[in-house]
Length: 126
Image (cartoon, rainbow, N blue to C red; front, side, top):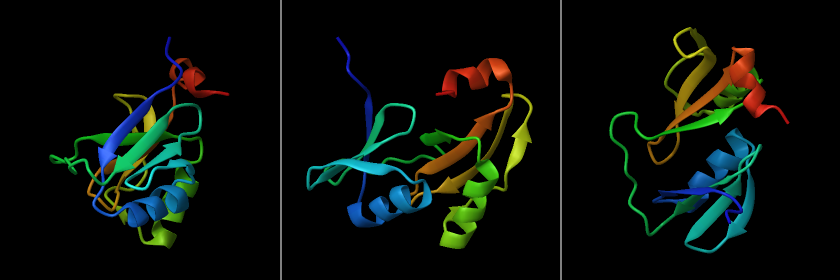
């Protein structure tokens, strides 16, 4: 039986990655295995970064999406921290979201979004 979910990605610099995900997104470090660090994602699940995995980015893929009701606050924080922002917050009617894109230290695309449709947003309420 399943007890959780972890998505692992490559990292060439765990300390810079750590500063990005804890400082910018506010994730908490769950496990430090030396060559891998695993972070708790609010709402459930984990994301891990490992030195022995290749950093694999093609264009904007993969996209690591974090859901919050405070998109504008996170956007302002990104500007204050000097995060590489790829777009300003905007509404995407096709998907019913409000979001913006940034880039993490490895080149992964990070999306910060909230769902505008109540039927979609209900899946992310605690």
